[in-house]
Amino acid sequence: MSIELIGLEGIPIVDESSDISQIIKDAILKQGCGLKHGDIILIAETLISKAENNFIKLDELTPSEEAIELAEKSKKDPKLVQAILDESVEVVRVGPKFIITETKHGFVCANAGIDESNVGEGLATPMPVDADKSAFEIREFLEKEFDEEIAVIITDTQGRAFRFGAIGTAIGCSGITPLWRRVGEKDLYGRELETTEIATADELSAAASLIMGQADEGLPVVLIRGFNSFDAIRDTDSNIKPLLMTKEFDVFRK
Image 1 (cartoon, helix red, strand yellow):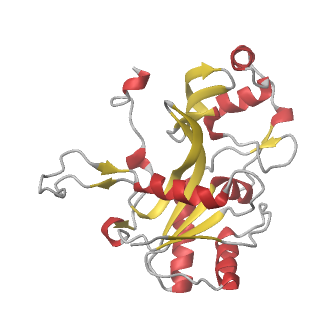
Image 2: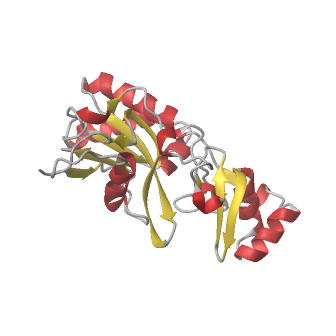
């Protein structure tokens, strides 16, 4: 068994006039890798936000009293803290150099997922407005153009509780279910699995992040080929919601 990760080269700096679907198609054709049944396209969320003209102009924000207080605790710029609050529904934890919030999308992550890297001075990019919708539209276009069944995942870089470092994480998907429930299957000894659920979209996102990088690699789109469980988790009505833990089960916020 093997899996192949292909960074699509030649993806340009995008803006609101850019057609991400067409850009990806052109990159695939130019690179000569084509698309095959079961291929998975992973796209960095910053690319989507830029194409949506989804920017935060930090210099235009006026920090509230809450933002100023949190900025003192977290040692962050008060204007960035205000942006974090604007993108959040709840502040979960505050620490040195980080603010953990629940975003308007339902993600619990550092700094509401706002990214200050790979954008112009004084700007920041929040998470895409609807990453599931973006993934769906790109998948529909590429499947029609190449006549193959594929999946698309929108990725972000996030940290994890109890561990240092960030990894690629799925924030939107289309074409496969992001959570593979394997309850009822048998293990190597014939025992029935009772609770096993695999965050497949996150695992694929983490793999793609190795190619995307976090600095000046310039590879915001990665093609994963050879994932042999594609047909088992194929779902054209999928979205990211199955991965999001509700407060009822989130013992760390109780």
